[in-house]
Length: 193
Image 1 (tube, one colour):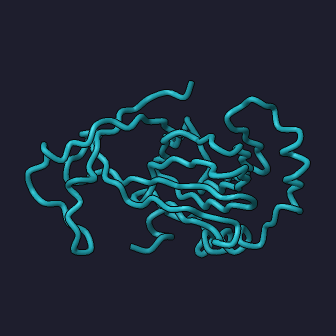
Image 2 (spheres, rainbow, N blue to C red; image 1 turned 180 degrees about the horizontal axis):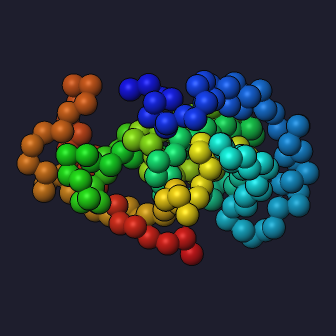
């Protein structure tokens, strides 16, 4: 369905406006080289909250090469992710809706994104469970729409990948003419350490 309907946008067109603004951001404006030089090593990654509004939250992530933000999900939220420097591998999953509350998810995409790629859109039901691995020192902005709110049932959940469970899924699971049984895996809710 329509992206704006899916995220229940309070203002018609808000997500499009935010995406256009994200696509205009660049590393110099956000002083990325200075922020990386002040980066608290040996941290795996660091986040700076840039702006919080009642409709969205904008964060800057600094992730050194070889480190990653673990598998996590944003229930009921849309996310725009824009790489400003470096490159990142984004591995995403969708919950297996035909097996509700089972902890089963299927691989949706595994792609490398760079600063020249524009914003990646993650929807509440598409690619929402994902990890981000820095292939080189990477800085990216993450716009969460609406913002996180434990109180309103919009926390960030962390997960751990489990075993592939294709042998337990009897019926073929098809999307765009492809059988996705071999990409079903069990995802267990975990905690960030």
